[in-house]
Amino acid sequence: LCRLITKGAVVECPITSADIRLYLTIYGPDVALIQGKTHQRKSKPIRDETIPMMVPTEQEIHIDIMFIDKDPYLVSVSKPMHLMMATYLGNSRSGPNLRVKLAEQLKAYEAKKFVVTLVLSDGEKGISGMLGALNSLGVTLNICSPGQHVPVVENAIKVIKERIRCVLSQLPYTLPKAFMRYLVLFVIGRLNMVPSKSTGDYICAREKFLGRKTNIKRDARICFGQLVMIPL
Image: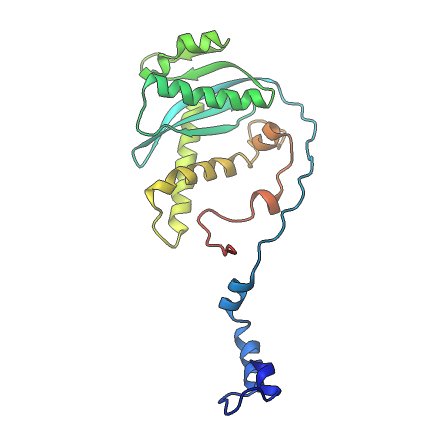
């Protein structure tokens, strides 16, 4: 528009080119113009950032069922790596469904060359029914006695729920229930980036599991629920 005015392409315009320059100085470029002309950037090439880690390959996992908005999640914490995992169970806490979800977590460890040798749990009926299936995989299932609990995973569940409440309190909108499972995964992913004080080596569980350092620009670019502009 500024060029049209200075070149005399339009007449009887109520604003001048000086008015336009002053507007851009005060308010900046037009947001709609930026959104309409933005193109998707090319992704950066993937680099191999694997680093050697001195982590015991044999791990034991502590499992329990966590409820968020009455929805069940299978939560596990491995030791000595202290890696947290959570799998959404949907509407079923049955033995077959729990076996499938636990098998998914065990395969994730197997894919990274870790071996789960022991599973510790409380007296959840669905979990106690997995004894035969776990034994066939070479995994020992240790069920607590009545009245006893698994403190490692119970403490982890408390921390997860605390962090979820923190995120929900700062969101500028009410989170739809369908998005809650993604918030659970986000919180656990961030907790895995924080080194555990009990290990003493100040290396986070995520780095031990993946074998690479956490990159803030790649792994923590935005917060959960943050509004972003996506080019069409």
